[in-house]
Image 1 (cartoon, helix red, strand yellow):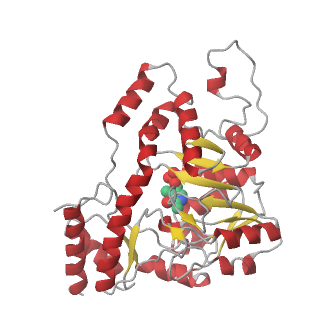
Image 2 (tube, protein in one colour):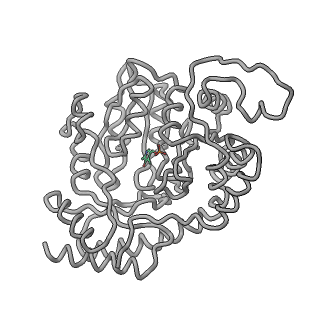
Image 3 (tube, rainbow, N blue to C red):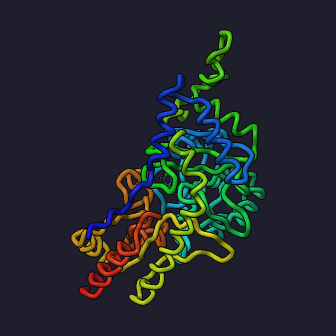
Length: 374
Ligand SMILES: *Cc1c(COP(=O)(O)O)cnc(C)c1O
C-alpha cells in the first residue's frame, strides 16, 4: 500500500468558491480576502488579521513593524524551517539561536534570558509540531526587556497552552497556508493580532507602502493614492482566499481526527521503545506533525526503508546550523546541542485527517518491520 506523506482535502466546495471568484470582477485582493481575514480572526479569538502571500511574508512584515533592522538581534529556535530565521535576515537583523527543550523540541524559554544582549529587539518562538512554547514565560521576559514577541504559528492554528492560543500573549502570530499545512490554499499566510495599529502597518507594508489597496480603489470615483514608505508585495488574492473559506468551519473536527491518529501513533511508538515529542502540560496541541526520534546513526536508513515500503516521510527539521548557509554565517551545531541532536534523530510520519485507519495500520506495520530489522 502506498501512503503519501500528505494529502489535501480541497474538494467540490473549494471548486465552487473559486468558480465564484472567476465569475466576478476581482481576482486579486477583495471581498473574499476580507471574509477570510474576518473569519480567521474570529476563529483565533483575535481582533485583526491580514491575509498575505505566505507565512514567511507575515514573519518578515511582523519583524519590520517591530522595527527590526541592521544590528538588531532576534532570539529564536534553530529547530525550525529556514523561513523563521530567513525572515530575520530579510528584515536586516540577525538570528540568535537558543537551544530547545529535549522533550518537546520547542524553544527552551528558561534559556532565553541568558541570551538577551543590548542588541536584542525581539523573541520569535515557533510552536513546533503544533505544541505551544511557554508563552507566559516569554511574555514576561519580553515585558521586562522591552522586546517584541512574534509567534511563528505555522504549525499551530488550533493549539493552546495555559488557556492562551497563538496571538493572545504575543504581539502578533504568523500562520501558513502552504500546501502541506492544516489549512491550505497552495501558498498563503496570515498575520493576526489584537493590535490594530500594528496590523494597519503590516497591511500597508504588504502593498508597497501604499495607503489604500486595490479593492478600495475599485469602483469608486478615482482618487490619487500615495506611497508613504517602502513596502513589499505580499497581499493575498481573492482566488486563493476563496479556497480558505470552506476549510475554516472544519478546522476543529479535522484536529480531532489528527488527535485520534496521534494517540494511536504514540501508543505504538511507546511499545516499540521509540521516542517522540511530548505535549506540554495544560496544552492542546494542534497536532500538525507526528514525529519520531530514532537513533541518529539509523535515521537516514529508517527514512529510506519506510520509503521503500511505500510510506511517505519527511524531516521536520534538521537544526539550521547543519545547513551550509548558516554555517557560513558562523552558527555552530555545538552551540545548540539539543536541537542538533533532535535534528539528526527526527523523522515525520503521515498525519492528516484523510489518513484512513488501514493506511495508518500500513504505516505502523512498516515502522515495526523496519525497527525490528535494526
Ligand atoms: C511552513 C513554515 C513556514 C513558512 O510558511 P510559508 O507559508 O511557506 O512561508 C514558517 N515556519 C514554519 C515553522 C513552517 O513550518
